[in-house]
Image 1: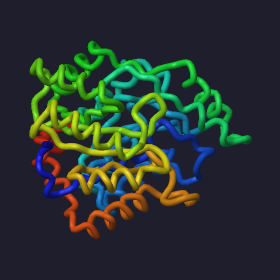
Image 2: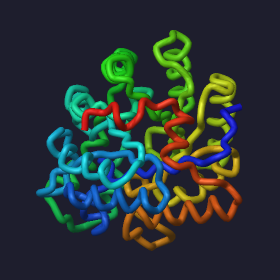
Image 3: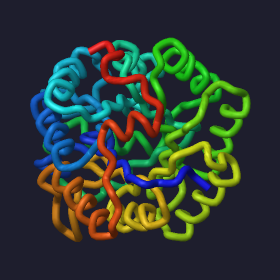
Length: 312
């Protein structure tokens, strides 16, 4: 079984690289918007903030470290939340581009996708007839014939460059059962040390579906592979977000919400901010008599190096 969860970690994924500005007027794009949304999410109860950057001119995903530096220090100054920088970047980015900001900032945590996979966004293009920016529809359509590359060498290199060199720990993103086995292979070779934060991800086309049965399948596989060496967290893309993360919390897991994963607060109701989603899941957790973890709790639970040892 995963480590007993006395306190539930709420991670907020603030903007991501999946949704485009046409889809919601509330998606944070500029450094000021990302900073404000992240700070409000932390005040609402998020103890981990998962961060991407966007070009402030048109909202397209960006790997530019200068853009990250325009908002990450502001977030650190305003909140004690653990800052988690993407290594996934956005579709079409090279490994070097995806790692640039993380290597520059040397954060306490980074995300790490545990396998090469189809990551299909193109069905979303059918939902809109007009677009705010010209890049949006071609960006989504390009995912029909592309993939996210994370080979074993990529994974080993990222662990070496960030984990071994700078003490960064990882949110291991597992989009299917095979990714759990990839992670176990890396762990069994001694390249990473527990406790592991395993983020099981549901509802991305190309990965495992957002079905309750799959939640149990991923949990059981992780228990077999990692025993009590891991903390289990759940995220679900789109409309199943709140349902699945609530089920996961009842089963003893941590939760991730945010506008990267879903733009909605309820059926047909766009979330006006990340803080709205964080506040919603916090109320659900507390109504279930579950205690929300603080950033101090998270640093202890995940053996993080501390905010004084980052490069920002």
